[in-house]
Amino acid sequence: MNTQERSRSLWETRRSAEEALEGPLRTHADLLAEPFRLFDVCGDRLVLSDMDFGRVCALVTAKARSLALGCYSLALDGLAQESGALARPLFESLELLEYLRLDPKRAQEVIENRKPSAGVIARRIEGKFQELRGHFNQHASHLSPGPESIRHLVNFQEGRLRTVLPNDERVLRANLNVLIAVTCAVLRVAVGCLAVAQAHFPEDLTASVRELSQRAYANCIDAAGKFEI
Image (cartoon, helix red, strand yellow):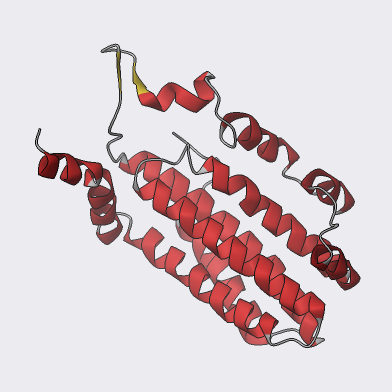
């Protein structure tokens, strides 16, 4: 295989995934475009707040957007297992926003670089993602030779490594389902933070996030809702 052919093969999985987004996964593509737009709108409004709370929440919202986009990109390349390293701080972003929403004075902890650890924050808000964060920590955030981390890299039937992971529409669909659910959850909390910063509910954004969530659960998100490799 020459250099040009190798270069093409690097992106074959993504090209196949993009074709699926234009075809059988078009609903997923459309649904995922909306949360990124809403992240931008919410972040722009938060940053205009005169409060440190609003500006800190804007930064956390922007970070969550970047992490979600990274997960999306890696899923298209067949690297959803590796995206777990981004999924863990994405969930931490959600929990940090909730921690700030419950007590806006906590923004000062972030500014002064003395906010509690992710685990402490989760306990204080009675977060529900400790087990999931632990899974990412063990199998995705650090290099691990365990089966959960490497099984997608080995073709056990042929006894060789998988250097290229082909697009699997079933797996991509499952991972996009999860990403849609997570982005909706982050948005709900971010809009809640905006309501605190503005001292009133942003009715347009609240309605948009509610409609997005309803469409997502009606069209994409199943009860299994989990990362699948």
